[in-house]
Image 1 (cartoon, rainbow, N blue to C red):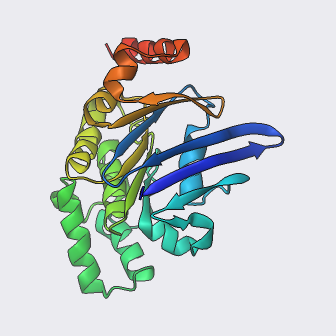
Image 2: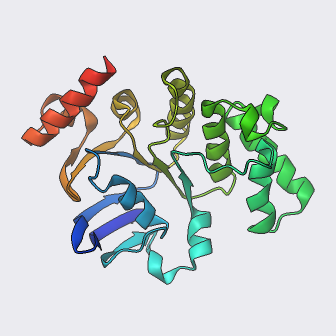
Amino acid sequence: MSLLEFEHVEKSYEEEDVLHDVSFAMDRGDVEVIVGPSGAGKSTLLRCVNRLTEIDGGRIVLDGDPIHDLDVNDLRRRVGMVFQDFNLFAHRTARGNITLGLEEVLELDHETAVERADAYLGQVGLSDQVDSYPAELSGGQKQRVGIARALVMEPELMLFDEPTSALDPELVGEVLDVMADLAAEGMTMLSVTHEMGFARSAADTLTVLEDGQIVECGRPEHLFETPENDRTAEFLGRLTDLEQ
């Protein structure tokens, strides 16, 4: 059984199709990267998985459970999400941003929450920043706190919505390294990114989305080297040129 399935998913805003007949599946441990031009529906696709955005048609299934049959808080415990703009609480330390969900959602006692938060901050290389506030952290460090905050809930699936797009170029690598480590450890990941090096090295499947529809999907090496669709070749070629 697939861990995540999209079945003919539809989403529209004011009669404009944002997602149209989107169908694909991911097995446990898969890393799938979604790419496409601005306005293609990539972020909407991710937001539909944890019901930040509700679909209009079709269904999304998580480990056999249609997501609309799940309590939304339970769903979001099972599906972690990392946003492009960090979404950290400015008045809480790195540790405090992570313990909040553990104490309020999982109802862990403070000592246990701190112990778990520190362990996950260590996993993303921030053991020396547990008491730092967001204003004292670089963009890359803030994003790694965001990753730790999602991981600490021990989700079945991680969503990454262009996690490096708000970072200065010199900070991108530290976030991609954490994501690559997670992929190597077997975390199931669905990521929207323009980082083609990560897509080539870490993704099991690369999917090109345009105008809310899947243009082409397959192994990254196939889409980069011998794409079947002209739009795939044009788009990936442009992104690759930008990275060089």
